[in-house]
Image 1 (spheres, helix red, strand yellow):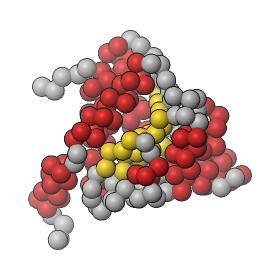
Image 2 (cartoon, rainbow, N blue to C red):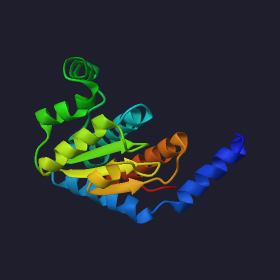
Image 3 (cartoon, rainbow, N blue to C red):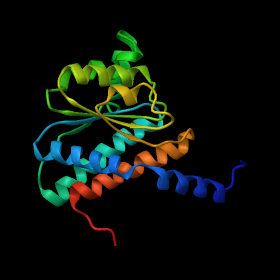
Image 4 (cartoon, one colour):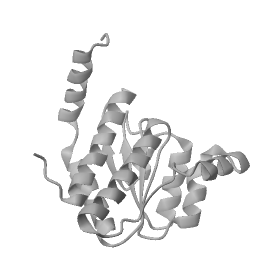
Length: 187
């Protein structure tokens, strides 16, 4: 299919109509539960997924503070460039997220791994480590889910092999969680 604005929108609508909405609702419930219990909510991803990971935390921290006047302990492992490059240089890029988790992750915290392919080694290492520490793991994945879909305890699977469509829907999931956390209405 050739690119056109109409084809892109139609493809996005098809992906949205086919997504398992119960997975999104479960993800919303998991994030809200960890927030209410004062647990850390940590995100990671690569490329566009890194920006989605950062965007989630930006929105969730700000909007829960504004609407609830309550601390939100959200952290993106993508945001500290010095830390990412230190681990990448000294240990290896496959450990940029796991290394950071070793410093801050506690039992019962939440790790959200965002990945189009579900096969990024650094994200897989982070999820595996979080599982061994008794944290909750939530994958936000695309394509066929890759290896990540079998490592994370919970998943939201966007069943598309188009990276841009996956990233669009992944960002929308973050926005839905924002509205749920902050109890914002859609007008």
